[in-house]
Image 1 (cartoon, helix red, strand yellow):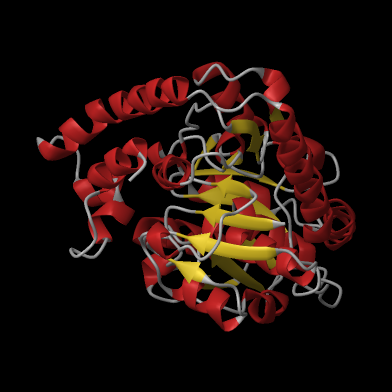
Image 2 (cartoon, rainbow, N blue to C red):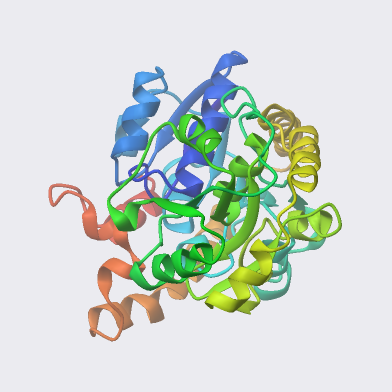
Length: 372
């Protein structure tokens, strides 16, 4: 198959960017042809190119017509759909809050994928997308990279805050809680200017990790004890008892129900158990293998391509109306940005960072609609 994958950015090492990297490499290893597209390129784009996965920031440079669009983030996914008439799509929603993650409605998006039950609710209940069009595929870990560490000590000695959002207050609270147990704390993440492209080499050096989402999965796959944690709120220490519930919620926003205080964190640190964490590691490695998720994606891609071939030819009028509805949905947000009610970079960083020589997004959309 020839697959075009879109994403808001391919710059910083964050969740959806690394999701693209991992599935692209796995698909390429299976003999499929991949191209990744975003208007904002950076470290992850470089990593993809170094692994011989082509990356573009202008769809006019697309060297072939894909069989399928794997769309992530509506601006980029819709740009691809309108630039490539006649190509079916799968749309993957990674987040509950980000504006960029809103699932677009368009006739050629035949399936939607959500990474947990929180994003499932966003797709079904907020966007009113029929449930039969939606699949849940939980997030994964590249188990070849993230190998199990040696058994944890009876008491934790070193802890890691593994987060791109670990600002000063967050770090201070975690450190004060850990100080009660004589635990040393380090931080890895964009907000502290300390990032790594090889977290698999750092995680085995720690006993206890504070993280959420993808970072939490990677830590548990290595065998670290894990407290679900983020700016302002925390969740529980992951255990055998609460694992299934937390997994369905991707160790994310719905699991962060407790205020981030020293006492609340200390109460969770007291739940530390090397035996429990070892069992959690075993379960994660059994359930969250990257290759199993890619198996599911390949089956879904083939299903969508086969279904699309059986459908009547797309009605240009229906697609024009859907494109118009999509552009209308952008209007309130863009007007708030232009009026200064919302900071521009916080809402549309990919558009804000696009080179000036590129055509404005809306002009490109209108040209795609007209078929030029």
